[in-house]
Structures are given as structure tokens and as C-alpha cells.
Length: 370
Ligand code: SF4
Image (cartoon, rainbow, N blue to C red; front, side, top):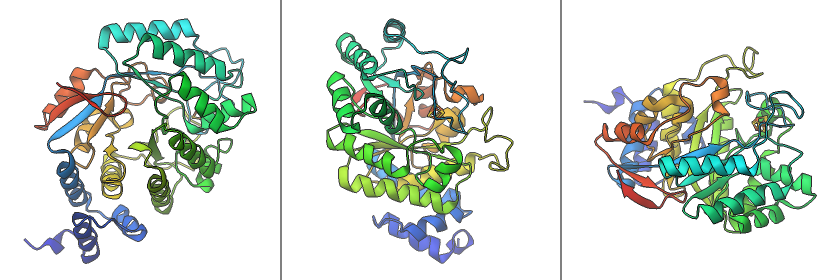
């Protein structure tokens, strides 16, 4: 069968180069995003993913602690936050957090607590230090994957201290890795529309650099499907690539699709189209082509796209299902399809592909086959 029936010569050259470990250039990535050949791009991404990981995929038993919904940053894509003093605002105290983790440990033997919340101006660093120390002391086998660069920036403003000092104190308290949240699209023209009060792209990258440089690894994310252009998406990818070449601190990349329900962006001219499964599969594939050998793990993004799409994502270059995310409250405020999974469902979903499944810890270390 003539391959030109499916891909043009430029796409063919790009994909053949990828198979020879030659990374796609900026313009190559633009071309691939514009391509209608998602399946063929996905086949190449799947091939290079399997070349690295074989027929295996991982997941982590975890919970999300959305410790406060109080926030002064008013992102237009967020349905979760409440202003200080709002009747529906909340902040969890250390006893509530301890009992939630105890319950999750007893029921699910979780290996990761993902801690994320709003930019709450009433919380100083001791709030976080006390929580992290408690988790670290009482649950030593649970990794703390907590806070984003913009939360670190908020704490440093509250404390009138540098981000590096804050990171260093949190690391001493037990913070094991930083989340990749708050990146959205690392282009200030985009951020100025969707989250004008949040830290700039350069500040996000600087705080990640500082975290990595003191031995705190992290994930990296991208939230696409709102006001960004294809050019912005590729710039985002290449900014992450540039930092990773310097620090090698990113453990995983997670592309999220934007969920518009209950957000200010919904209904406005900014967001006109629903981003569907093909876009997810394209982003997963592209992530593998760009990051393979540089950022080890590509997550399947089940939270915004559902378990069925996440299963398919494993055939398009992802190698990790992410976590069970018990207790998630941010995306669930948008009414997204599914915001809680059991490990059984994840394991069955991966087995259906004929893959082996293993449970991992926060740092992607093997725990056991399931
Ligand atoms: S996304 Fe985070 S920083 Fe932005 S409004 Fe929501 S809670 Fe606040």
C-alpha cells in the first residue's frame, strides 16, 4: 500500500527521523499538530514508547488533598476557588488532613499524597511545614507531591522570603516533589487572558529551576484547548525541553484538556470549541515524540478525558496512567466526567490492552505487578 495515501512527504520525513532518534523541530511540531494523520503519528509514538517500556504501564495509588479553596488569583478557567470570606470557602486543618490520610492509607495503601490548593493569603509557611512533617513522620512510605510554582510564589510573598528559601524549608519538612500545575500554556499573551493575576511564564520556569537545583523533582503540565494557538502549544513544549536540558528535574509530562463548565471562560467568545479525544491523542503522541529520552514518563490524563480515552492514550505514547486521585475537588467542580477511580478499574483498563500493570511510588519506582 502506498504510504503517500496517508502521510505527505514532510510528515513521512519527520516520523522517519523520530524513529532514528532525531527530534522533531519547532516547525515539524507545528506540521504534526496540523496533520490529520493522528493515527499514524500515534503509531510512531506508541512504537517508541514500547521500545522504551515494553508492554507495561504504571499507576500510583494516591489521593488529592485540595487543602483550601480560598484564592485571590481569580483564574478565568477555574470553577474551584472562592474569595477569602466567601461562605463556601474552606481550609483543612492538620487534624482533618491526618484523618483523611489515615483513612486512605488503611483502605488503599496509598503511596502518594498530591497536595494542591488556592492562593490563600492567610496561610504562612508553618501551615505547610506542619502538614508535611506530620505526613513524613506518620506515613514514611507516602511521598508528598505538593504545591505548584504559583503556590510557592504565594507563600514567598506571604513570608516576604525568596522562593528558593521556601522550597528549601518545605523540602526539609518532607516535600518530595513539586506538581507541574499552574503552567497552563507558558506564553504570557495566553496567561494574560486566562489567568492575568498568576505568575508569569518566566517565573514558573524560574521556580521549577530553583526546585530542581535543590533536588526537588517535579512534573510538568500543559492545559490546552482554550485561547491558545498551535504556535503557543509548540512554544510551551520547547520551553519545557529547554529547562529539562538544564536540570533533568521533570519526571513526567501531563497534557490536560481544558474543562470549561462553570468557569468564566465558558460562554465567552474565548472558548468556542469542545476539545475532543483526537486532540488528546495528538497531544499525548506529540509529547512522546518530543520528550522521549528527555522526560521519562507521559501520563494519560484520565482526569479530564475519562478512563476510556486514557486507555487509548496508552496506545498513543503514554506509559503511565497517573493516580487514583481519590478526593479530587478542582476538576470535579467543572462537572468533568469522572474524578475518582479505583485501582481495580485502572488495572483492568490496562490489562484489556494486553499490557502488564505495575504499581509505582511517587518517584516512579516499581512497587509490584498487579
Ligand atoms: S486555578 Fe488555582 S490559582 Fe487559579 S483561581 Fe483556581 S485555585 Fe486559584
